[in-house]
View (tube, rainbow, N blue to C red):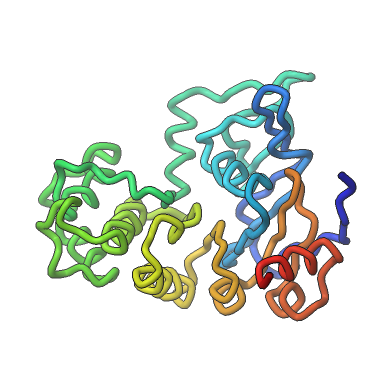
Length: 268
């Protein structure tokens, strides 16, 4: 398959660069999920990643967060190599202690919530600071309560996941990710597992984060959300970035032919 390509539009030149990915390749057996991808993220940016199923969107996020190790290329965060580094033709992992520290730059919100079923909403939020961060529970309580109130769950703090709706579970997951004070929030299709009537309550929380300057990368199939909230939209196909630009550029007909075909297919 021949992919349309476009001159990459990166972040504005005056935006402080946090994340830089160069020539990132990730393979699963004979399948190439990411094919020499270049991607950068600036402080305060909200980047929406769109594209057909299997295009590499989630794999890109998982490589940023080091849940998947790249096979080639280089990822840096504020100049520090993340996860792996090339030594000759080999991609070598950094020490586990270093990787654990690096992962704390990122807060990850998954499709499927991944809450601890035997923990209350509040204890789920406190798990990171207390178990990973080594804080005493009494020292973390105030921020945990604040974060649950921020996502609209002040009255659900002592409820267990089985007592919460899908939208409420996802909001707990967002609060849990925020509890570690990450510099970048990563969202992997955060509304895909939700009933349609619950989608907006999660998107509204993400909008509030965007308005407050949180740096985010969001894999999403919610095009209207991407149009309204993102500062940059990235289209992936076949493991490559095939177009990117402002929402006005992407959704206003200024993209590549591949971009136009993808957006048109959503309305068929």
